[in-house]
Length: 501
Image (cartoon, rainbow, N blue to C red; front, side, top):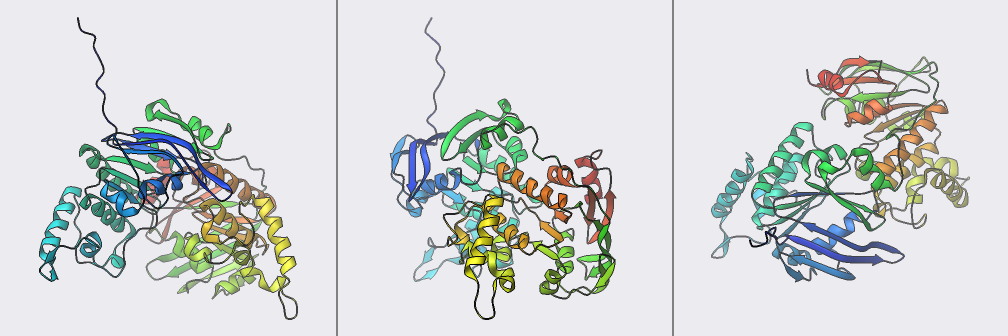
Protein backbone atom coordinates (compact mmCIF):
# COMPACT_ATOMS: atom_id res chain seq x y z
CA UNK A 1 0.00 0.00 0.00
CA UNK A 2 1.21 3.52 -0.68
CA UNK A 3 2.48 5.41 2.37
CA UNK A 4 -0.07 7.80 3.83
CA UNK A 5 1.13 11.38 4.06
CA UNK A 6 -0.27 14.34 5.97
CA UNK A 7 -1.32 17.12 3.60
CA UNK A 8 0.72 20.29 3.89
CA UNK A 9 -0.65 23.78 3.65
CA UNK A 10 1.26 26.92 2.78
CA UNK A 11 0.92 29.34 5.71
CA UNK A 12 -0.55 32.76 5.04
CA UNK A 13 2.45 34.31 6.76
CA UNK A 14 5.89 33.17 7.81
CA UNK A 15 8.33 35.30 9.75
CA UNK A 16 11.70 33.62 9.53
CA UNK A 17 14.58 34.56 11.89
CA UNK A 18 13.76 38.27 11.78
CA UNK A 19 15.98 40.70 13.68
CA UNK A 20 15.62 44.43 14.22
CA UNK A 21 17.80 46.82 16.22
CA UNK A 22 17.58 50.44 17.23
CA UNK A 23 20.42 52.48 18.80
CA UNK A 24 21.36 50.59 21.95
CA UNK A 25 18.42 48.18 21.73
CA UNK A 26 17.99 44.82 19.99
CA UNK A 27 14.22 44.85 19.68
CA UNK A 28 13.88 41.56 17.77
CA UNK A 29 16.40 38.74 17.88
CA UNK A 30 15.85 36.03 15.25
CA UNK A 31 12.09 35.84 15.79
CA UNK A 32 10.04 33.35 13.76
CA UNK A 33 6.31 32.68 13.52
CA UNK A 34 3.72 31.18 11.21
CA UNK A 35 0.11 32.24 10.71
CA UNK A 36 -2.39 29.95 9.04
CA UNK A 37 -5.54 30.81 7.16
CA UNK A 38 -8.59 30.93 9.42
CA UNK A 39 -6.76 30.98 12.74
CA UNK A 40 -6.19 33.42 15.58
CA UNK A 41 -2.60 33.55 16.79
CA UNK A 42 -2.38 35.37 20.12
CA UNK A 43 0.87 37.32 20.50
CA UNK A 44 1.69 38.02 24.14
CA UNK A 45 4.59 39.33 26.17
CA UNK A 46 5.55 42.08 28.56
CA UNK A 47 5.88 45.71 27.46
CA UNK A 48 9.17 45.94 25.63
CA UNK A 49 9.08 42.28 24.58
CA UNK A 50 9.12 43.22 20.89
CA UNK A 51 5.44 42.83 19.96
CA UNK A 52 5.04 46.37 18.61
CA UNK A 53 8.29 46.20 16.66
CA UNK A 54 7.24 42.91 15.09
CA UNK A 55 3.88 44.18 13.90
CA UNK A 56 5.44 47.40 12.63
CA UNK A 57 7.77 45.35 10.43
CA UNK A 58 4.69 43.61 9.04
CA UNK A 59 2.98 46.97 8.53
CA UNK A 60 5.95 48.57 6.80
CA UNK A 61 6.66 51.15 9.50
CA UNK A 62 10.02 49.42 10.18
CA UNK A 63 12.21 47.41 7.84
CA UNK A 64 13.90 44.24 9.09
CA UNK A 65 17.68 44.13 9.54
CA UNK A 66 17.87 40.39 8.89
CA UNK A 67 15.54 37.48 8.20
CA UNK A 68 12.67 36.93 5.81
CA UNK A 69 8.98 37.82 5.59
CA UNK A 70 7.08 35.26 3.52
CA UNK A 71 3.45 35.81 2.46
CA UNK A 72 1.60 32.88 0.88
CA UNK A 73 4.89 31.22 -0.01
CA UNK A 74 6.58 34.28 -1.52
CA UNK A 75 9.45 36.12 0.15
CA UNK A 76 8.58 39.82 0.19
CA UNK A 77 10.19 43.12 1.08
CA UNK A 78 7.76 45.27 3.06
CA UNK A 79 9.26 48.74 2.78
CA UNK A 80 6.18 50.90 3.37
CA UNK A 81 2.61 50.73 4.73
CA UNK A 82 1.26 50.85 1.18
CA UNK A 83 3.37 47.82 0.23
CA UNK A 84 2.06 46.00 3.29
CA UNK A 85 -1.54 46.75 2.32
CA UNK A 86 -0.96 45.68 -1.28
CA UNK A 87 0.27 42.31 0.02
CA UNK A 88 -2.95 41.78 1.98
CA UNK A 89 -1.70 42.80 5.43
CA UNK A 90 -3.74 45.20 7.54
CA UNK A 91 -2.73 46.49 10.98
CA UNK A 92 -5.29 47.89 13.42
CA UNK A 93 -3.19 49.80 15.95
CA UNK A 94 -4.31 50.82 19.43
CA UNK A 95 -4.37 54.43 18.23
CA UNK A 96 -6.77 54.31 15.28
CA UNK A 97 -5.78 55.86 11.95
CA UNK A 98 -9.13 57.49 11.27
CA UNK A 99 -9.57 61.16 10.39
CA UNK A 100 -12.19 62.49 12.85
CA UNK A 101 -13.70 65.12 10.55
CA UNK A 102 -14.29 62.70 7.68
CA UNK A 103 -17.29 60.39 7.43
CA UNK A 104 -17.17 56.62 7.83
CA UNK A 105 -17.37 56.22 4.05
CA UNK A 106 -14.67 58.80 3.39
CA UNK A 107 -12.31 57.12 5.87
CA UNK A 108 -12.83 53.67 4.38
CA UNK A 109 -12.09 54.87 0.82
CA UNK A 110 -9.46 57.46 1.76
CA UNK A 111 -6.74 57.42 -0.89
CA UNK A 112 -8.74 54.96 -3.00
CA UNK A 113 -11.73 57.10 -3.88
CA UNK A 114 -14.05 55.78 -6.59
CA UNK A 115 -14.08 58.35 -9.36
CA UNK A 116 -16.90 59.29 -11.73
CA UNK A 117 -15.27 61.64 -14.15
CA UNK A 118 -13.77 64.48 -12.15
CA UNK A 119 -15.89 63.75 -9.08
CA UNK A 120 -16.13 61.09 -6.38
CA UNK A 121 -18.85 58.53 -6.99
CA UNK A 122 -20.38 58.69 -3.51
CA UNK A 123 -23.21 56.34 -4.49
CA UNK A 124 -20.86 53.49 -5.41
CA UNK A 125 -18.77 54.11 -2.29
CA UNK A 126 -21.90 53.96 -0.15
CA UNK A 127 -22.90 50.67 -1.79
CA UNK A 128 -19.41 49.31 -1.08
CA UNK A 129 -19.60 50.33 2.58
CA UNK A 130 -23.03 48.78 2.99
CA UNK A 131 -21.77 45.47 1.56
CA UNK A 132 -18.84 45.53 3.99
CA UNK A 133 -21.15 46.27 6.91
CA UNK A 134 -23.46 43.46 5.80
CA UNK A 135 -20.50 41.04 5.96
CA UNK A 136 -19.73 42.25 9.47
CA UNK A 137 -23.36 42.35 10.61
CA UNK A 138 -23.13 46.08 11.35
CA UNK A 139 -25.73 48.80 11.31
CA UNK A 140 -23.88 52.09 11.03
CA UNK A 141 -24.56 55.30 9.12
CA UNK A 142 -21.83 55.55 6.48
CA UNK A 143 -22.13 59.37 6.45
CA UNK A 144 -21.63 59.77 10.18
CA UNK A 145 -18.44 61.63 11.10
CA UNK A 146 -15.85 59.44 12.79
CA UNK A 147 -15.46 61.91 15.64
CA UNK A 148 -19.07 61.11 16.59
CA UNK A 149 -18.50 57.35 16.80
CA UNK A 150 -17.86 55.35 19.95
CA UNK A 151 -14.48 53.65 20.35
CA UNK A 152 -16.11 50.32 19.49
CA UNK A 153 -17.65 51.77 16.32
CA UNK A 154 -14.33 53.30 15.29
CA UNK A 155 -12.70 49.91 15.68
CA UNK A 156 -15.36 48.28 13.50
CA UNK A 157 -14.74 50.94 10.85
CA UNK A 158 -11.05 49.99 10.96
CA UNK A 159 -12.00 46.34 10.43
CA UNK A 160 -14.29 47.28 7.55
CA UNK A 161 -11.48 49.34 6.03
CA UNK A 162 -9.16 46.32 6.29
CA UNK A 163 -11.71 44.11 4.50
CA UNK A 164 -12.13 46.74 1.79
CA UNK A 165 -8.39 46.37 1.15
CA UNK A 166 -8.92 42.63 0.66
CA UNK A 167 -6.77 41.87 3.70
CA UNK A 168 -5.88 38.23 4.25
CA UNK A 169 -3.75 38.92 7.32
CA UNK A 170 -5.26 41.10 10.06
CA UNK A 171 -3.24 42.28 13.06
CA UNK A 172 -5.23 43.62 16.02
CA UNK A 173 -3.27 45.46 18.74
CA UNK A 174 -5.10 45.52 22.09
CA UNK A 175 -8.51 45.71 20.38
CA UNK A 176 -10.56 45.27 23.57
CA UNK A 177 -8.69 47.69 25.83
CA UNK A 178 -11.46 50.32 25.91
CA UNK A 179 -14.52 48.21 25.09
CA UNK A 180 -17.44 47.18 27.25
CA UNK A 181 -18.08 43.46 27.70
CA UNK A 182 -20.99 43.63 25.26
CA UNK A 183 -18.75 45.27 22.67
CA UNK A 184 -16.05 42.68 23.28
CA UNK A 185 -18.60 39.92 22.67
CA UNK A 186 -19.54 41.57 19.36
CA UNK A 187 -15.85 41.87 18.42
CA UNK A 188 -15.28 38.17 19.14
CA UNK A 189 -18.29 37.24 17.00
CA UNK A 190 -16.85 39.25 14.11
CA UNK A 191 -13.46 37.62 14.59
CA UNK A 192 -15.17 34.22 14.40
CA UNK A 193 -16.81 35.24 11.12
CA UNK A 194 -13.47 36.47 9.73
CA UNK A 195 -11.90 33.12 10.59
CA UNK A 196 -14.64 31.36 8.63
CA UNK A 197 -13.67 33.49 5.63
CA UNK A 198 -10.08 32.23 5.86
CA UNK A 199 -8.55 35.41 7.24
CA UNK A 200 -5.57 34.89 9.55
CA UNK A 201 -5.55 37.09 12.66
CA UNK A 202 -2.68 38.05 14.95
CA UNK A 203 -4.31 39.15 18.21
CA UNK A 204 -2.26 41.13 20.75
CA UNK A 205 -3.69 41.46 24.24
CA UNK A 206 -2.61 41.76 27.87
CA UNK A 207 -5.96 40.27 28.94
CA UNK A 208 -5.03 36.63 29.24
CA UNK A 209 -8.62 35.48 29.65
CA UNK A 210 -9.20 36.67 26.07
CA UNK A 211 -6.29 34.59 24.83
CA UNK A 212 -7.94 31.43 26.11
CA UNK A 213 -11.32 32.46 24.73
CA UNK A 214 -10.43 33.58 21.21
CA UNK A 215 -7.04 32.15 20.19
CA UNK A 216 -6.15 28.88 18.48
CA UNK A 217 -2.44 29.19 19.28
CA UNK A 218 -0.44 31.50 21.52
CA UNK A 219 3.07 32.82 20.91
CA UNK A 220 5.20 34.39 23.65
CA UNK A 221 7.91 37.00 23.12
CA UNK A 222 10.32 38.06 25.86
CA UNK A 223 13.18 40.56 25.51
CA UNK A 224 12.89 40.46 21.73
CA UNK A 225 13.16 36.70 21.50
CA UNK A 226 10.68 33.97 20.70
CA UNK A 227 10.01 31.90 23.82
CA UNK A 228 7.35 29.41 22.79
CA UNK A 229 4.37 28.85 20.51
CA UNK A 230 1.71 26.38 21.65
CA UNK A 231 -1.90 25.42 20.92
CA UNK A 232 -4.04 27.19 23.51
CA UNK A 233 -5.48 23.92 24.83
CA UNK A 234 -1.96 22.86 25.87
CA UNK A 235 -1.34 26.01 27.94
CA UNK A 236 -2.33 26.98 31.49
CA UNK A 237 -2.66 30.56 32.68
CA UNK A 238 0.12 30.19 35.27
CA UNK A 239 2.49 28.63 32.73
CA UNK A 240 1.77 31.37 30.23
CA UNK A 241 2.56 34.05 32.82
CA UNK A 242 5.80 32.27 33.69
CA UNK A 243 6.86 32.26 30.02
CA UNK A 244 6.03 35.95 29.70
CA UNK A 245 7.89 37.21 32.77
CA UNK A 246 10.70 34.65 32.77
CA UNK A 247 10.16 33.53 36.34
CA UNK A 248 7.73 31.51 38.37
CA UNK A 249 4.87 33.47 39.92
CA UNK A 250 2.91 31.69 42.63
CA UNK A 251 0.18 34.32 42.48
CA UNK A 252 -0.82 37.18 40.20
CA UNK A 253 -1.51 39.31 43.28
CA UNK A 254 1.14 39.87 45.96
CA UNK A 255 0.23 39.35 49.62
CA UNK A 256 -0.51 42.47 51.65
CA UNK A 257 0.05 43.20 55.33
CA UNK A 258 -1.74 46.54 55.65
CA UNK A 259 -3.63 47.26 58.84
CA UNK A 260 -6.89 49.12 58.40
CA UNK A 261 -7.02 52.32 60.40
CA UNK A 262 -9.69 54.91 61.07
CA UNK A 263 -11.91 56.55 58.49
CA UNK A 264 -9.91 59.15 56.56
CA UNK A 265 -12.29 60.05 53.75
CA UNK A 266 -16.04 60.12 53.17
CA UNK A 267 -18.49 61.33 50.55
CA UNK A 268 -22.19 61.82 51.23
CA UNK A 269 -24.98 62.12 48.66
CA UNK A 270 -22.65 63.13 45.83
CA UNK A 271 -24.49 63.91 42.58
CA UNK A 272 -23.71 65.28 39.13
CA UNK A 273 -26.46 65.15 36.51
CA UNK A 274 -27.37 61.65 35.36
CA UNK A 275 -23.79 60.39 35.69
CA UNK A 276 -23.42 60.47 39.50
CA UNK A 277 -26.53 60.05 41.62
CA UNK A 278 -26.61 60.11 45.41
CA UNK A 279 -23.27 58.36 45.91
CA UNK A 280 -22.09 57.84 49.50
CA UNK A 281 -19.16 55.80 50.79
CA UNK A 282 -16.25 55.97 53.22
CA UNK A 283 -12.57 55.00 53.10
CA UNK A 284 -10.16 53.97 55.84
CA UNK A 285 -6.41 54.48 55.99
CA UNK A 286 -4.58 51.33 54.89
CA UNK A 287 -7.54 50.27 52.73
CA UNK A 288 -7.93 49.55 49.02
CA UNK A 289 -11.54 50.20 48.06
CA UNK A 290 -12.47 48.71 44.67
CA UNK A 291 -15.00 50.48 42.45
CA UNK A 292 -16.52 47.94 40.08
CA UNK A 293 -19.12 48.19 37.34
CA UNK A 294 -19.48 48.18 33.59
CA UNK A 295 -18.09 50.96 31.41
CA UNK A 296 -20.44 53.93 31.79
CA UNK A 297 -21.58 52.93 35.29
CA UNK A 298 -20.43 56.26 36.74
CA UNK A 299 -17.16 55.20 38.37
CA UNK A 300 -14.84 57.60 36.54
CA UNK A 301 -17.44 60.38 36.74
CA UNK A 302 -17.58 59.93 40.53
CA UNK A 303 -13.83 60.24 41.09
CA UNK A 304 -13.61 63.20 38.71
CA UNK A 305 -16.13 65.03 40.91
CA UNK A 306 -14.14 64.07 44.01
CA UNK A 307 -10.95 65.38 42.38
CA UNK A 308 -12.60 68.66 41.36
CA UNK A 309 -12.25 67.97 37.63
CA UNK A 310 -16.04 68.17 37.28
CA UNK A 311 -18.40 70.27 39.41
CA UNK A 312 -20.85 68.50 41.70
CA UNK A 313 -24.52 69.39 41.86
CA UNK A 314 -24.96 68.28 45.46
CA UNK A 315 -23.11 66.36 48.13
CA UNK A 316 -20.40 66.69 50.74
CA UNK A 317 -16.79 65.52 51.03
CA UNK A 318 -15.07 64.93 54.37
CA UNK A 319 -11.35 64.41 55.01
CA UNK A 320 -10.36 63.25 58.49
CA UNK A 321 -13.92 64.00 59.55
CA UNK A 322 -13.81 67.63 58.43
CA UNK A 323 -15.87 68.98 55.50
CA UNK A 324 -13.87 70.26 52.55
CA UNK A 325 -15.04 72.19 49.49
CA UNK A 326 -13.15 70.92 46.45
CA UNK A 327 -13.91 72.82 43.25
CA UNK A 328 -10.68 72.30 41.30
CA UNK A 329 -7.93 69.67 41.00
CA UNK A 330 -5.55 72.18 42.61
CA UNK A 331 -7.76 72.20 45.72
CA UNK A 332 -7.95 68.39 45.70
CA UNK A 333 -4.15 68.15 45.54
CA UNK A 334 -3.85 70.67 48.37
CA UNK A 335 -6.12 68.41 50.45
CA UNK A 336 -3.92 65.36 49.85
CA UNK A 337 -5.92 63.72 47.04
CA UNK A 338 -4.37 62.63 43.75
CA UNK A 339 -5.89 60.97 40.69
CA UNK A 340 -4.13 58.64 38.27
CA UNK A 341 -6.42 59.05 35.30
CA UNK A 342 -7.82 56.29 33.13
CA UNK A 343 -6.30 57.87 30.02
CA UNK A 344 -2.69 58.37 31.06
CA UNK A 345 -1.60 59.46 27.57
CA UNK A 346 -4.07 62.32 27.15
CA UNK A 347 -4.80 63.27 30.77
CA UNK A 348 -1.93 61.96 32.87
CA UNK A 349 1.10 62.98 30.82
CA UNK A 350 2.31 65.64 28.41
CA UNK A 351 3.75 63.21 25.89
CA UNK A 352 5.99 65.70 24.05
CA UNK A 353 7.71 66.62 27.32
CA UNK A 354 10.44 64.64 29.02
CA UNK A 355 9.81 62.24 31.86
CA UNK A 356 11.60 64.66 34.19
CA UNK A 357 9.35 67.56 33.15
CA UNK A 358 6.25 65.40 33.61
CA UNK A 359 7.47 64.36 37.05
CA UNK A 360 8.02 67.96 38.07
CA UNK A 361 4.78 69.49 36.76
CA UNK A 362 2.58 69.06 39.89
CA UNK A 363 5.59 69.60 42.16
CA UNK A 364 7.07 72.84 40.84
CA UNK A 365 6.39 74.70 44.07
CA UNK A 366 8.54 72.39 46.17
CA UNK A 367 11.41 72.53 43.64
CA UNK A 368 11.28 76.30 43.21
CA UNK A 369 13.47 78.78 44.97
CA UNK A 370 12.64 82.43 45.18
CA UNK A 371 12.91 82.84 41.40
CA UNK A 372 14.41 79.80 39.68
CA UNK A 373 13.67 76.09 39.59
CA UNK A 374 16.07 73.97 41.64
CA UNK A 375 16.79 71.54 38.79
CA UNK A 376 19.32 69.49 40.72
CA UNK A 377 16.82 68.79 43.51
CA UNK A 378 14.10 67.95 40.98
CA UNK A 379 16.47 65.52 39.22
CA UNK A 380 17.53 63.98 42.54
CA UNK A 381 13.91 63.36 43.52
CA UNK A 382 13.07 61.94 40.10
CA UNK A 383 16.01 59.54 40.23
CA UNK A 384 14.92 58.44 43.71
CA UNK A 385 11.42 57.53 42.56
CA UNK A 386 12.63 56.14 39.22
CA UNK A 387 14.81 53.73 41.18
CA UNK A 388 12.10 52.75 43.64
CA UNK A 389 9.52 52.24 40.88
CA UNK A 390 11.99 50.64 38.44
CA UNK A 391 11.11 53.11 35.70
CA UNK A 392 12.98 52.12 32.53
CA UNK A 393 14.09 55.13 30.49
CA UNK A 394 17.08 56.08 28.40
CA UNK A 395 17.43 59.05 30.76
CA UNK A 396 15.43 61.85 32.40
CA UNK A 397 15.30 63.75 29.09
CA UNK A 398 13.48 60.94 27.23
CA UNK A 399 10.07 62.01 25.92
CA UNK A 400 7.18 60.39 27.78
CA UNK A 401 5.66 59.37 24.44
CA UNK A 402 8.47 56.87 23.87
CA UNK A 403 7.97 54.91 27.09
CA UNK A 404 6.09 51.63 27.32
CA UNK A 405 2.61 51.74 28.85
CA UNK A 406 3.84 50.34 32.14
CA UNK A 407 6.62 52.90 32.44
CA UNK A 408 4.26 55.74 31.52
CA UNK A 409 2.00 54.64 34.36
CA UNK A 410 4.97 54.59 36.73
CA UNK A 411 5.94 58.17 35.77
CA UNK A 412 2.39 59.31 36.57
CA UNK A 413 2.60 57.46 39.88
CA UNK A 414 6.03 58.95 40.66
CA UNK A 415 4.86 62.54 40.29
CA UNK A 416 1.99 61.90 42.70
CA UNK A 417 4.15 60.03 45.20
CA UNK A 418 6.36 63.10 45.31
CA UNK A 419 3.29 65.02 46.51
CA UNK A 420 3.00 62.61 49.45
CA UNK A 421 -0.79 62.42 48.97
CA UNK A 422 -2.84 60.51 51.54
CA UNK A 423 -5.72 59.47 49.28
CA UNK A 424 -4.72 58.03 45.92
CA UNK A 425 -7.30 57.27 43.22
CA UNK A 426 -6.26 54.74 40.56
CA UNK A 427 -8.56 54.70 37.52
CA UNK A 428 -7.83 51.49 35.55
CA UNK A 429 -4.26 51.32 36.91
CA UNK A 430 -3.12 48.38 34.76
CA UNK A 431 -5.03 48.95 31.50
CA UNK A 432 -2.76 47.99 28.58
CA UNK A 433 0.03 46.87 30.94
CA UNK A 434 1.66 43.45 30.85
CA UNK A 435 1.53 40.85 33.60
CA UNK A 436 4.99 41.55 35.02
CA UNK A 437 4.41 45.32 35.18
CA UNK A 438 0.98 44.70 36.70
CA UNK A 439 2.58 42.78 39.56
CA UNK A 440 4.96 45.69 40.20
CA UNK A 441 2.03 48.16 40.25
CA UNK A 442 0.21 45.88 42.72
CA UNK A 443 3.29 45.76 44.95
CA UNK A 444 3.48 49.56 44.88
CA UNK A 445 -0.18 49.83 45.83
CA UNK A 446 0.41 47.44 48.72
CA UNK A 447 3.40 49.42 49.94
CA UNK A 448 1.31 52.60 49.88
CA UNK A 449 -1.48 51.23 52.04
CA UNK A 450 1.03 49.55 54.34
CA UNK A 451 2.43 53.06 54.88
CA UNK A 452 -1.05 54.23 55.91
CA UNK A 453 -2.23 55.70 52.61
CA UNK A 454 -5.75 54.95 51.32
CA UNK A 455 -6.57 53.89 47.77
CA UNK A 456 -9.70 54.00 45.62
CA UNK A 457 -9.20 51.66 42.66
CA UNK A 458 -11.43 51.56 39.58
CA UNK A 459 -10.97 48.45 37.47
CA UNK A 460 -12.94 46.69 34.76
CA UNK A 461 -10.90 43.51 35.30
CA UNK A 462 -12.81 41.41 37.81
CA UNK A 463 -9.82 39.26 38.84
CA UNK A 464 -7.98 42.50 39.69
CA UNK A 465 -10.91 43.90 41.68
CA UNK A 466 -11.22 40.67 43.67
CA UNK A 467 -7.47 40.15 44.01
CA UNK A 468 -6.55 43.64 45.25
CA UNK A 469 -9.55 45.09 47.11
CA UNK A 470 -10.31 44.97 50.84
CA UNK A 471 -13.86 46.05 50.06
CA UNK A 472 -15.80 46.46 46.78
CA UNK A 473 -18.50 48.95 45.82
CA UNK A 474 -20.42 48.11 42.64
CA UNK A 475 -21.97 50.89 40.57
CA UNK A 476 -24.61 50.89 37.84
CA UNK A 477 -26.33 53.84 36.15
CA UNK A 478 -24.50 56.38 38.31
CA UNK A 479 -25.65 54.78 41.55
CA UNK A 480 -24.15 52.39 44.08
CA UNK A 481 -25.90 49.03 43.67
CA UNK A 482 -24.20 47.11 46.43
CA UNK A 483 -21.17 46.61 48.63
CA UNK A 484 -19.07 43.47 49.09
CA UNK A 485 -17.22 43.31 52.39
CA UNK A 486 -16.19 39.63 52.33
CA UNK A 487 -14.03 39.90 49.23
CA UNK A 488 -12.14 36.64 49.72
CA UNK A 489 -15.45 34.79 49.88
CA UNK A 490 -16.89 36.54 46.84
CA UNK A 491 -16.80 35.67 43.12
CA UNK A 492 -16.84 37.34 39.72
CA UNK A 493 -20.43 36.21 39.32
CA UNK A 494 -21.48 38.10 42.46
CA UNK A 495 -19.84 41.30 41.24
CA UNK A 496 -21.41 40.97 37.78
CA UNK A 497 -24.83 40.26 39.28
CA UNK A 498 -24.70 43.64 41.03
CA UNK A 499 -23.29 45.35 37.96
CA UNK A 500 -25.98 44.27 35.48
CA UNK A 501 -29.17 43.61 37.44
